[in-house]
Length: 127
Image 1: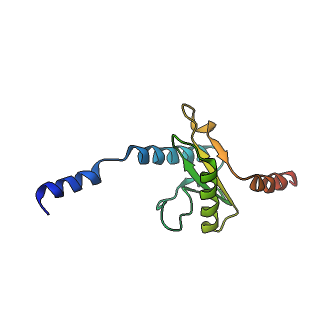
Image 2 (image 1 turned 135 degrees about the vertical axis):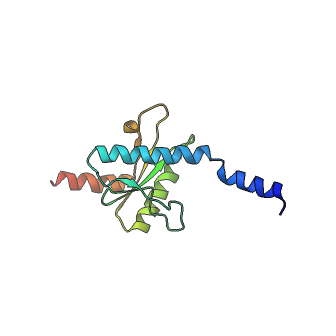
Image 3 (image 1 turned 90 degrees about the horizontal axis):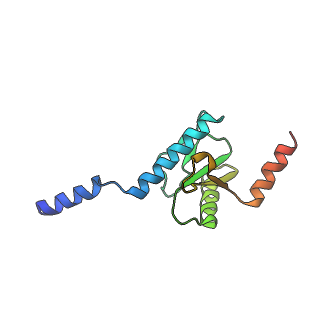
């Protein structure tokens, strides 16, 4: 391998990926919001994207949280990913937190299946 190849390879590793940076920032913002609103243990889960991914955030008992900050919103894909990650983590609920353009993190969408919503609503109704 020549010096030019080595330099190009090292530059690729140091140039940041703007999409990944936006996604990581959104994860930090969601975790910060959750900590400020009753979930002091909320934080990013490091190692996301591994074979048996368990979601982007930890610290909300019973939930896997998958954060999405993408230009194209694909709710079915996002929820399917969250549900699969909930199964990997051994928790009951998987939700996707989806960034709304030009809105604060508090106005993000939280997306789940109707089945999950009905279970949660039933439990809250029994309290």
